[in-house]
Image (cartoon, rainbow, N blue to C red; front, side):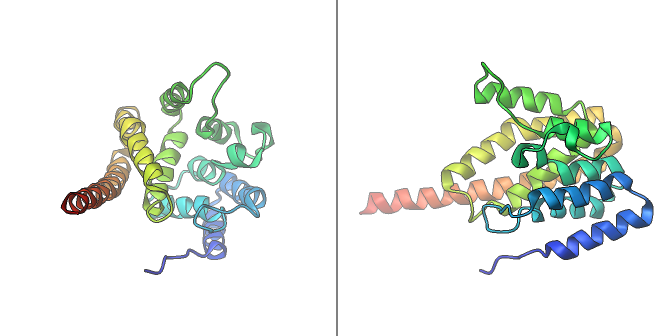
Length: 215
């Protein structure tokens, strides 16, 4: 089955045109900066890395998200973590910087990875921009992980989604009730994909076990 390949240049042009038309200053700054910093990087599926934040931003716009700070946070969400960029280098306002800071995962001295994840997800709720970015990020990642992740990685990602992401989504409904419609859409998409992949893996493993028993 041929994989869908998204055109980074077309998405970039669309976002730039939309942002220019409605005066989204932070988005325009983030857009060019993200493309510059992700230049040469690849996703695990071989796509240019910039396709990931661009796809997320297009998804956000298609959901009716028109908040300049949120779209800018989406575009920059991996720049500090994956490109070695310091927070103060980001050419955006403090709201976007805070969103990117909360999206940047790191294990602090003395922490285990599990403790760091708990801290990370607990802090995300402090910023609506970060929460929306994390949920759209998870939507895109679960949608593209089949055929790319190993079985072990798929199981680990599904477990993390159920342990941390879905509780974050439920918490966000209380903190940001104005986003309830979008949060419902995001929950529906994430749970549908995760459950489908999980059930498919379980069925495959069960079939293999039955075959081994017969042999």
